[in-house]
Image (cartoon, rainbow, N blue to C red; front, side, top):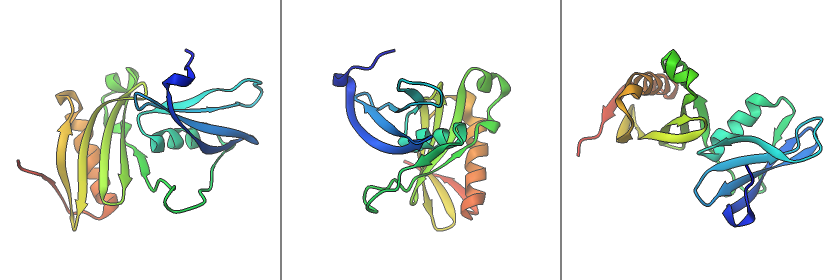
Length: 169
């Protein structure tokens, strides 16, 4: 698949892989692609992709031991997002069909993303308030409810939250 320049919204530095630069491309549709030269290759290629830049960087770090993230020059340009993969809560069939569950935390905002082959197909928007994770918006199919419940409970424990609450409308 070739991406033309008119399909790219922005390009930023992501880091280095085996001494070669890795760039993070954002397409006009909002999809993120890490592009760089893999060891033993002479041409740039897609190394990782996903619906959120933090997920792409997380996957780069997991897949390539030679990857070094870029150091940002200012706190403003840093993405403070923390990504955790919770795919072990999915059924075996869903994992085999390319589904994953991630939590992306930036400050008190936590988004749980359900992806299929690295494309976001559902999400749950939450906030961390005092001792609780509060679910504000849920856009998922019922087949993912068990996985989201497990991921939310796991995230609550890691954040020290004693409760999970669904915000009423």
